[in-house]
Length: 519
Image 1 (cartoon, one colour):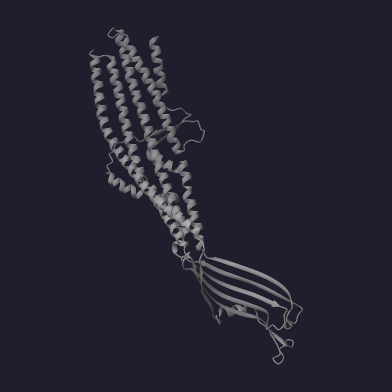
Image 2 (cartoon, helix red, strand yellow):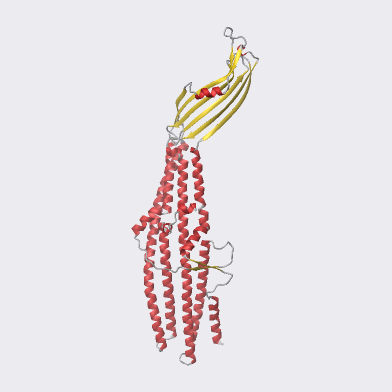
């Protein structure tokens, strides 16, 4: 009866942990690279971050609209009635009807000025007397140019919004690149932790089997009177302890699966069905050699955080230059050239008595005025300078001081980021080197533990030792195998961390950020 009580939990353990999977569970076999590709495609953090470059690109397009040419249309209609105050008007009430319309082409120029071309047309009609042309059609073709010479002058000042928007786009791309690097690292870490959990589970199973074999052997020896019955109790306690270790190892597997499944977005929120991920890649041990100097050179060139901070400094320096420009007085150059044209109904008076009623009229079409304007028969031009000196510039000075302080702050932040990268890369290189040495040491330690156990089993067979020491060596072997696996996983994770800190995880997989965004 006692034997049945001990064998029953052992059978339950092996039935519960047999390799076949229940139909209610999703079983997915994936390599590490398949996990990385799926995470970059389906991870929610990546999906959220990928929108930001699109938003920044829209801001760039909006900023560029400043330099897009535009057409302006204007229309006006006016009716004026005034009492007559001059006898030559020959009317008690003078009525003037004015109709005007224009179309303008306006183009901003990179230096801060603007160029315009306007065609202006009008029609005027009055009831006043002694009019030579009534109704009168007027046209004017006008070229205009305005250019600030001090305040608001310069390529960077006029294109500030575009330059800032482009910097923000570069920053958003760098932040997206950082998200990709972090996602790849987290996937690698989760993948290898899951692989370790599964291998650790196998080690615990092997340890349990060794304890069970020893228990069975002890029972036979007790039956023949070779061992005292107390030895069975020690073996049974060890079996029970290792069964508990297997349960703990199973929990580790479930937890590691959940972390990786979340990164790959394999489960909907609230879904209770287990997703069982089977890693197809085994931890391989290939030494990666890189000096600290070489690693720092790569990190200082490719780190997304440094790229972001440098663009931030560039933006702040631009804002400071613009704010400094706003402290200058306004001096604007204005130039215009126009050609007028005139047409309408010509009223003919008696040359002998011009105050007599009209003796005839000649009607000319409105198009004659436009033709005359385009013939440039009459030259008119105007050039001038406008100087405006503010009596107070407290706001502009405050803006400049704030922009200068923001620039100084961002430069200090750059030094801080460089220092953080130095510390992170140094720690990553040290951790990788240390993990490599740990693997080498634990390999030797595991081999020695294996040999000690084999020697102790041989001594037990000839009665030169006890179960207690054999169980101790079994525990030691299991511990050494677990430590070796853990060291190998730590090494792989350390390599992944170093690649993340150097910003080379994408380059290693031939992933280009801009191409990824387009896809």
